[in-house]
Image (cartoon, rainbow, N blue to C red; front, side, top):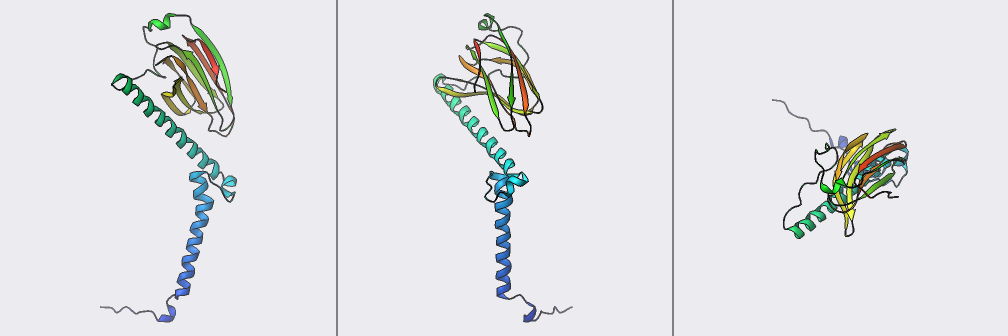
Length: 217
């Protein structure tokens, strides 16, 4: 059995030394919070260091994506509530992008066919939107490609009294194609945002039953 020698009081840290160590640790924690955590997580950069290191841009992107996701989720919930109230049941699934063209088209799609090819240039962080005026049940074949990078996309629609109806979303996409079927009469189309560090060009080709194509600048 061994006896443990207790160090003499002269070797133990004094209350002043302990207090000093606590103050130093708290100061280091505050510095890390202000220079790293706040810029990287919330895009807040009171010192300017986060902007130099790129952490502020990362935090701003995180916050923007979170805001977009929250807005889209709120809009979808509002639409589901509206449809359930009007019809007494949840809305049916809506055909959206990345689906093969059906063998038989709805009767509304048998009308005049429109076609367009447009290009949209997006600077870093920039977003643009293109929409088609379509009647309920009308369908459009589409394909879009990205030159110079990738984009985040949101295929959606709106009408008077309804600001947002979502079809599909994607992140870091180079292209997409399929058939868009209008859930109701209104404006239906695509929103792209460039989250890269350089400019990109989005080329959209459409063909089908729609009245006009609009650049929503």
